[in-house]
Image 1 (cartoon, chains in turn red, cyan):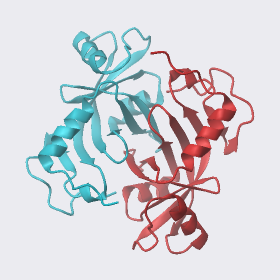
Image 2 (spheres, each protein chain N blue to C red; image 1 turned 90 degrees about the vertical axis):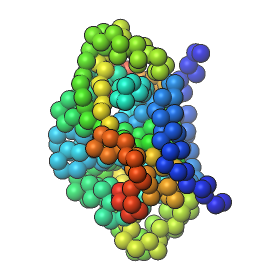
Image 3 (tube, chains in turn blue, yellow; image 1 turned 120 degrees about the vertical axis):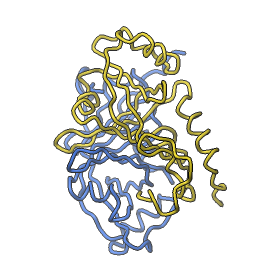
Length: 162
Length: 162
């Protein structure tokens, strides 16, 4: 079966924002411990003010790794229609503390953590964002770099690491 | 909407093996660099002789991280019907070198890396394996520990880290 035609840049950006704001969607969150052990869990995603927001127990591996290293790599969508985000922890806040953040989270997620004892919102700032479906969308897949949406497609050959 | 009834242990094991051997299925591979940066990519999976086998460029971040740390965390399936595997690198072999391994890989994956210059098969030995759908399947989700399939469900409360 031939691959679908690669999407152009503006279509990818629109599809990416639609994906990130999908109600009740999950995000794969990869983190690493200080001794280099990888961790990965799926959790509910909210995309609030250009930040990826997750809610986790403050004692979870994900929270501990993120608070220590500040770094996560996120994946949203199925493996052949994926948005990959390298992100930095901007802040961690107890779920009851920031009313606007809590409202933004529950407007998208399919559960409400605001009364969950010990839970935190982790607010993740995207640094690099890539979106692709099949192998023919690897060129041009980088849509954000250094925390800014790119205005031009990247030259072919960059960011082809896989 | 109420959650579906949690599956019993034997159903989970059967579903897990069916998931891992699905033709043309992808696996999320989380690894970490020596400086603690998480990495995550989706790649094709083959489940060969109780090992997860992936094919990647030897210079890729995933290959470099795995050869250095020997550790990966894998996810197969959608986020609400997931098989999570903590795995160790058993061996890395050039794609043309091990005929039986190559045949096992292409029998499941939807591409053939055996002529791809610089590609390796990474053979990952599962150490801990968990499977769950919704939150009501968190108890009993650990099906393998220390590289062995468990014969008894774990007592409630263990492995509830999320």
